Image 1 (cartoon, rainbow, N blue to C red):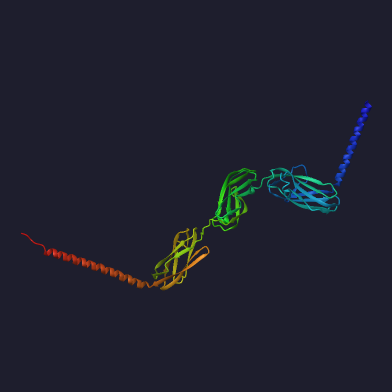
Image 2 (cartoon, one colour):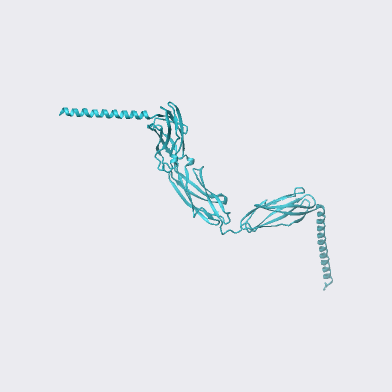
Length: 422
């Protein structure tokens, strides 16, 4: 019985030896079939250790970062139709965004002992979890066994300047709005950075229509998203139909910001009242003045529209014979249905009849008004003033003489009528 047991042990050992020999032969066959070798790997210009599997030289990458991968190869034997593949593993939506996390080279041939390199490009998805994950590089030809090596990536959040992204923007009832109508907007923002953020400001604006609304988030936690649904904007009654660019901007971390744009379509509304109206300008067309004396021409501007307009007044044709100034200024804002006045002051240095122009401009409209100024000699004016003063003085003297004579006569009459008693 002992001899039988010994024979069984010998048989078992023989089987083990045969199995080990078979495994060794298979392994040797497989190794010899790998006709390519990865000699170097560079990512974004940095050389990565090819000591695959130890994960002691991890590459730190940001979400959203592009990875330019340069794989250097050496042919151990002549190889045909070689291909190189690169994949980032561990991404939940890889099947939806395969073009970001997977890349394959074209086929090429290599002769024995030749070296060549292949360039591939991947992108770390913005939605990828912050974690350690693997970058796998595979090379092979049409006949040999595929060689695969792994390199560990450490995925972190984006840089601080890119921490906030505008995830989604939606308009209610739609992005087609009648002029004069209001619409609401919802904006979803997400913090894909490494730290929580405070005081995030989000603005929703249509610059061409000069309308904007703003909302604030007092806290936006890292890897969290928030929805702001309090934006309410109204399209002006008389907005021109057409396509308008909408700007959604998020400001954060004091000096950083991100922006997205979309388009809104404005169609004609039924509440537009003609806001342009007309303009009525009144002013005295002619004045008289002595040389060296300042005279004013009041220019009254009436805005018959329903919205405010800005008017500018310019004066020309005075430079050769006098000076001019405008008060309170050369521009004035006139509310719809209101009236404002700008005064043109002119000082004449020469005599005669002078014609000059006052031009009133608003938007693309302009109206030139001719004004006439009759300038007389200053001496003649002084004589006239002197005669007027002399006449007044003479009248006063005559009145005083008349009063004196009247009082004297009254006193004489009182003296004649008086009687003395003893």
